[in-house]
Image (cartoon, rainbow, N blue to C red; front, side, top):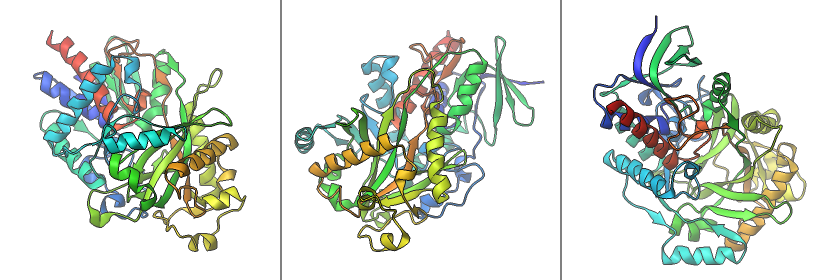
Length: 463
């Protein structure tokens, strides 16, 4: 005997929660359920939120990656107003529509306590940065950005959670084992319970991407290879990038390497921030955070350098490839590796003794000194080294001997489903949204995808 709903949303991350919010706004008397295999927001406990960035407590289901708010809950809340990065929604709808949806997501955030302050690449100072960058073949992508802050981002999501639980049913620690379709959708949970709905929205997030791909393959849906982003997180004194971060906060710089022609980009820049562990299905990778509260800030800035590769047939497992690369550093270090840039260039393994004499103090104390060349593929490592020398031309000191590199940083993307302009799969009334569906990779576009799917469902229900 299954419980019947009008709409079920799998995943309480950024995409899922905004889809839920929009359905509540646009429908009446809807029997709506949102599921997540993690905890509710008040039960998601991570030391990062208290500034204890190197005190991982090894949750059975990583609290950073799962639960209400998804991976974005404990992020530092960088919200980018652009279609140039953060996802591929313009493959399905116009740039104008995507930007309108992003602005709507921001308006929702503001109503729940988000700041109205924006950084922009449209200022005179930012345009000068872009000009200087171009002189060295670095391309600064246009965007405006809000920094919500790790601690404030959690407050905003808590406010949204308190609103949603009054208007719909939320279930946590609800692990969906299988999706079946026979005109309606039947979800079988771990333990055997079954739930049925007319409409289904898949918003599994990055941690559920591999599971979601397998379910879609079972249902006979077509998937396409997505890119794989592999790289390192760079940590250096904040003063080196201060002339950039003070102007645009987060700079998205793209570089095409001369050796291979690969694209390398800066990602997730955290001024005065911290490097942190991130657990994805038992694989420990590296990420970064920064706080709005000045009392919680460090003296360092960190950012990722990611090399994007898209593979062709017969390769069809980008998620597993990324996990395999990350697992090599786990094998060598029991977690995250850290190496001084100078040691890498000179072919030396960074040791605890050498690290102790570094002028840059690592903010991730749990990282193990080692040799990244034993964990990362040569091509990606060559690309990263070339990018660091390019960045050194606009931010002198980036290529200092003591600049720290943590690895591996891997962004896991699902193989991308074939979707129409409504973000609907080949099965009617089955929608796929967010990072876990392989169509977004950031807070803004993930939220926008949720609004889009909800708008379509609401229109069908209301008509």
